[in-house]
Length: 164
Image (tube, rainbow, N blue to C red):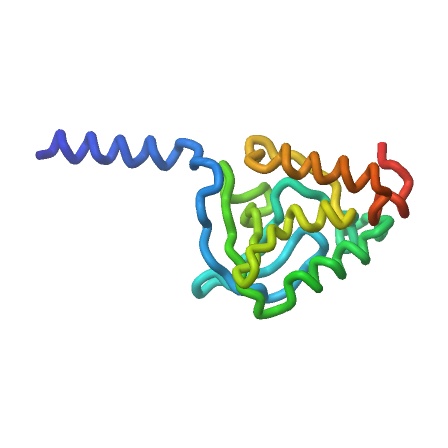
């Protein structure tokens, strides 16, 4: 019996240390607020959590010691329009659950219509692709959308000088 418990404990620890399979659900949440174009606050169960949208980067509007960047206010406004307070969302994880700032990392989908918010921001020219290795389940899709937006001169691709 003791050996069986040790094996189960070892298996549990190994599973906890192994990467989570891509697109594992983090759960359904309610939007509390939008921090900026790529970060939101949600109520997940009884807790409020900051969520960083995986795979994208919007121009900065609130980063300390950083000026507001070209198209930052527009990107934040788009995210706020897509995710007003009270919006029900599904958060889908990739390999890592959190970033260095302890924000949840997620692909965000609106419950009511299934809109993939991360991708919508790229399609609308509000965000550039940003790979969060090893969280790359949608990297190709996001990159292709950015290429299309860039070619079409959509959003920040028309308004902002190329970044180095």
